[in-house]
Length: 431
Image (cartoon, rainbow, N blue to C red; front, side, top):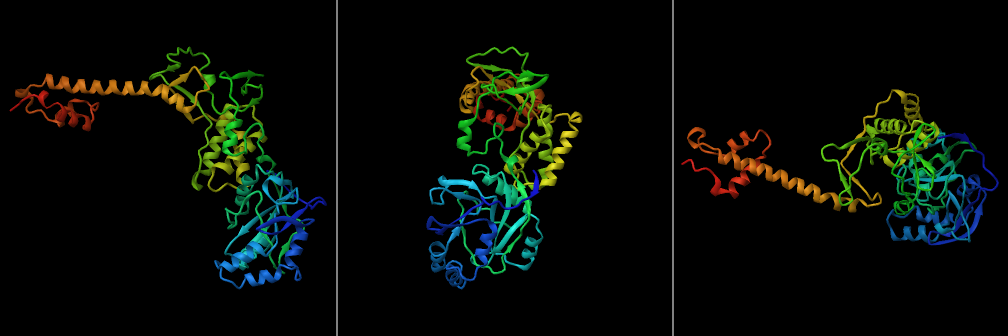
C-alpha cells in the first residue's frame, strides 16, 4: 500500500444535483477546493434551508422534508454520465472518498482531523451535529469501493459511520464558514485491492459465476509447484492436495473413493472470517506463511495484495498499513524456516470433480450411515455377550453400571441404559 502526496488535476469534476429526491445534475465544481468553497459560501441559495433545518428536532418530519427536497447534494467519489447521478451512470473516480461522522462535533475531534495526515478536507454536517470529511485516493473503482472504504476507516481510526457508503452515496450540501481544506494530504493508493485474475471483488453471486474450475493435477513449471486453470492461466495454490495424492491409486465405487481410516493429510492456506481484534496478527501471519509454503515463488508484492484483501474482508477491525507491512515482510523473509501447521484431512474423493457440496454429501452420507449402524450393532452385540456370559452366583446382580465397567470405555451410558429398557427379557435373572 503506497502513500504519496497528491495534487488536484484539472479533469477532477464533482457533480451536484438539486436534492436527494432529484438526482439530475444541475451543475459541477472542478475539485475538492471548489466544493469546500461552496460549503463555506455565505450566499448560496441552500443556506436558508440549512439554517431552518438546524433549529428543528432531529427526527421531526419537517427536518426530513427539508433534507430530502430542499438542499443540493454532491457525490464526492465518482462523477456521472447522462446528466443523472445513479449507479448505472457511474463514470470516473474523482480522486476523493467521502466519510461521515455523526453525533460528534467536539473540539477534540476537530483537533484529530487537523492532525490526521490523510484528511484532505472536513466540514460541519448539514445538521451541525457531526462532520463530513474527504480523503484523497487513487485506484478507486466501483467494484473495490466498499472494500476501500472499510480499509481506509481502519487507517483513519475515527468514529466514522460504517453504513454511510455506496457507489452513488449523496453528500447533502452543508454550510460551514470554518470548513477546512488541505492543499496537500497523503494519498491512499488502493490499487493493490484490485485482484484481477487472483481474487474477485465482485458480489458473491457474480463471484460464483466467475469461478473457473481447476485441473486436478498440480503442474510442475520451472521446478515450482503451481496451480493452473483450464484455460491455461497460472494461479496461486491454497492447498497441496493434488501434490500429496499424486501417486495414489483411486478405485471409484459408484463414483466415490473411500480412504477409510487412512485419511489423506495435506496443507491448506485458510483464512477464517470475522477475526477478532486479539487474533488479527497471528491469523494473518499464519495465512501468509502457509501461502508462501504452498507457493514458494510468490512475489512479495502479490503476497501483500492477498494479505491486504484478507485484512479488509476477514477482520472485524482491519490492521493499519504499517502492521500489515510488518506481517508480510516477516513471513516473506523467513519462509525457509516455516513448517506448516495448518493441516487438513480428506477421506472421500470423487470421480466427478464438478460435483457440488450437496451432491458430494448425498454420495458419502450412506457410507457414513452404514458405518455408524455397524458400530452401533457391534456395541449391542458386546452387551449381549456380557449378558450371555454373566454368572449371577459369582458376579451378583447385573446392572447398567457393571456393564459399563466391563465395556472398557467403548460402551456409552445412554446406549447401555436404553439396551436394558429395550431387552428386558434378555437380562440375566439373578433373583
